[in-house]
Amino acid sequence: MIEVRDLHKHFGGFHAVDGASLRIETGSITALIGPNGAGKTTLFNVIAGVHAPTSGTVIMDGEDITGLPPHVLFSKGLLRTFQIAHEFHSMTCRENLMMVPPGQSGESLWNTWFGRKRIADEERALRAKADEVLEFLTIEHLADHPAGKVSGGQKKLLELGRTMMVDAKIVFLDEVGAGVNRTLLNTIGDAIIRLNKERGYTFCVIEHDMDFIARLCDPVIVMAEGRVLAEGTIDQIKANEQVIEAYLGT
Ligand code: ADP
Image 1 (cartoon, rainbow, N blue to C red):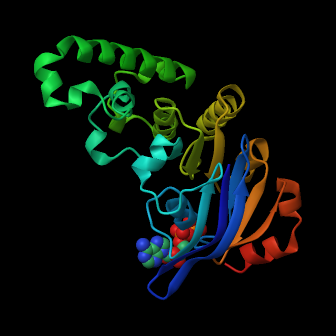
Image 2: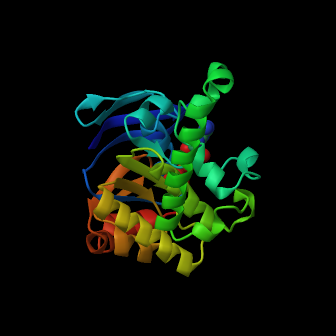
């Protein structure tokens, strides 16, 4: 689904991504791991259109998508999750989901004057969809809670929920497990597996929790110093001496 060819991203003289090449196969849950500073987040940001690459190519389903802005990639079904922005903290979890789909009728001044029925119909449909997503994620009880007041793990579920409000094909998840308790991490893992199996989502996740990776991810791609160091199953990766050395060296 995604092919990255000889990607470079330099910040001044610093090569954060330094010739990375990798593939993310359709239908996989691919893990991207590596020591801190390996360039994982930078690579994510380049693929998702947040940063323009210095050089190299990103292909999605045979199409060159290098350097396309996030909203264009979004319309192609490529999504990168972000933490819920500060300004949306006071909105409820349901409202946070309802505002995801772009181009809603209520955004047009003309419609707010003359298209009230259309806006009301659209809002009803969005609300129903948001409630369905909350139920899928087993957080329907949080529908009317302000998003800023829910726990870190529940926020992660909500981020995942936002990808379900549009037709995502591939989702890039950055550190799903950071600061999340084991029970919620399992719930997040269950949701990812179900989205993968039942809705055909492909995932690429940056994660540090090895149990989580062992349960969900195949293959595992290891980055170090801006490049891909190894790729394989979690057991192959754990036994790889170059990988062990890269982690010990940090
Ligand atoms: P990882 O996600 O693997 O920990 P990052 O991609 O966050 O690695 O960072 C790789 C390196 O690039 C780090 O040394 C970081 O300091 C540097 N870096 C990341 N973003 C920037 C930036 N905007 N400006 C300068 N250096 C950056």
